[in-house]
Image (cartoon, rainbow, N blue to C red; front, side, top):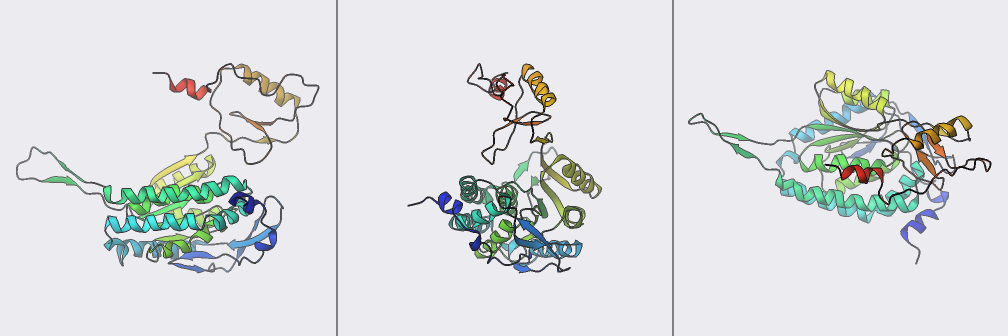
Length: 347
């Protein structure tokens, strides 16, 4: 029997062509964008457009945030006990696992990652929601000692409010779940803005929220461009917190905009931006050799294809040096431990 990854890898384009045009997910429904404009989304492997997503505007953002704010303050969501919220998150986790093959197929078409990697990521998402399902009823308050007689001091944790979640193209579902699961466990509501390059998988997942029992408006998804959707979302007066994963420039912009409204922000951004060199350059290669001679430092790289890359703080070097360059690109390390492992041993 072929594995799920093999089935996913063998999926033909014809199974994707029947997918409808994607709109926004607002107040428990898939709705077309107010301006009725759409953006093409391409399969990176074939370079062909296989679907279209809504090009939202500030009006779409207003509708989504208003829906999230209503769900936060009225209706069934604020009346639920922490245990009831936890059971909904647990069911959502099970639904994600049950639909992992379909969600992974859409995400792979959107961002071009390996089938085996995407199917594993989506399946593991179920555990994220189940983990926070168990924490939903463990958000504890405390009694504070005080020297004032007759005064009873205590803390009480309440939902932060409407959370804006903005994610990049590389792992849209996984990176959204890292932010969404704890927000829902705490009783918050959310508006998600996925990357305009990879929005389809998030919109495919959206109906699972209602199937898990989450009331309408608790989770909303608005797609589109950063200046047209992201900025109105970050600056919206009813948004209390912004969670962002992406590049430095966008993170800096979000931080500046959120500061104007005194909003809290969590940023998961890259510490450096690395250009890709697709053709050998002797100058670049010499620079690489010089850097290799310096003290090692931890390096991050995302390998989503068969091409080998070397990452540094300034450049990525494809391991395709001409034969007349005799020096090996990847020398054998002198230790089995990486630089990060060695640094972690220091006191």
